[in-house]
Length: 383
Image 1 (cartoon, rainbow, N blue to C red):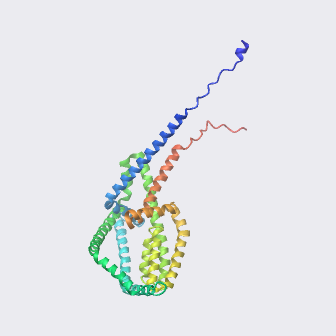
Image 2 (image 1 turned 180 degrees about the horizontal axis):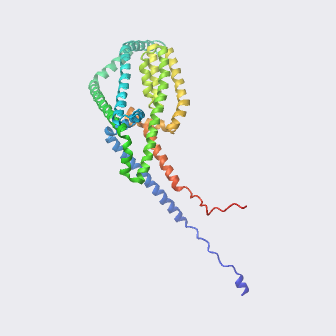
Image 3 (image 1 turned 90 degrees about the horizontal axis):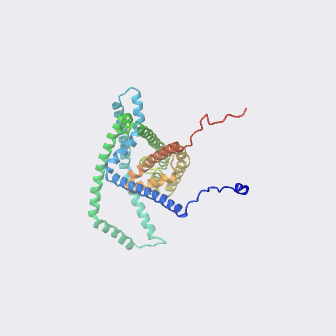
């Protein structure tokens, strides 16, 4: 009996899972995530298709929202001074139209006055290139150059129908641009006039629980877009002042026009500054020669270094919080899909998506945070 009592009882150890069960659960987990990724990709494709079909409607709305972020601060200032919202919005929209008209009126005479001179210098530059091709080391004969020119001319003549079609398409595009601009201004007027009424409407539509999240995301998106536009305007203005001032000092033709192009190009991060700088160098090369073009290259590089290393990190990091690689990829994708307008809207769209993703991440952190210990569970410290 003593030996029987001293025998230890067998312990119930947990049975390890079967290897096939582990592999099967892993495959099921991967299959679930694969289906989720496929569903997200399909939804993205459907959304892109809908956006492409409704681009005529979405484009004015998107541009109007961007313009409204610019017009809202002066409108808010006027309404706080006692003006009715409709009158304040009308004053800011009319002022915006007057500013655009003033810029156009300032640019057009300069283009008209200097275009003939620039064309003559461009012709002289072409002749210089022709003489260079005829000299050493290439020594291309006149007959070869004439045959190349004749081939280009015959190609253009044979494509007269396509060129005419392109001209009519350009006229149609210009008409569509005017209509779009008018629609953008009208929508921006209503956005800045009735913007404060949108939050109560959202609460009524989405309910108290969802409306709270929608309101918070809307406020963050609005602040992000406003910060982006103000930051880009400041950076673009500094670029235009420095580069335009250098072009004026060097006597480059169309310096004022190039300064305005530099300002507008600054609203397309990275790519716009490069294109505007290349255009300034090209005009300087045609109008003033190789030495002036080299000086313009130095000015453009210096200003872009100031922008990339000082202005963009300090200003854009506060408003955008996007890496330069994401900005470049967004501009490239937007430009390839929807042209210049797509390149302009690409960064704001990505910034809005980033705001939504960050907010979702914050809500996930709140739900997954470990619970705090209650006062009863905390043992008092020994005295």
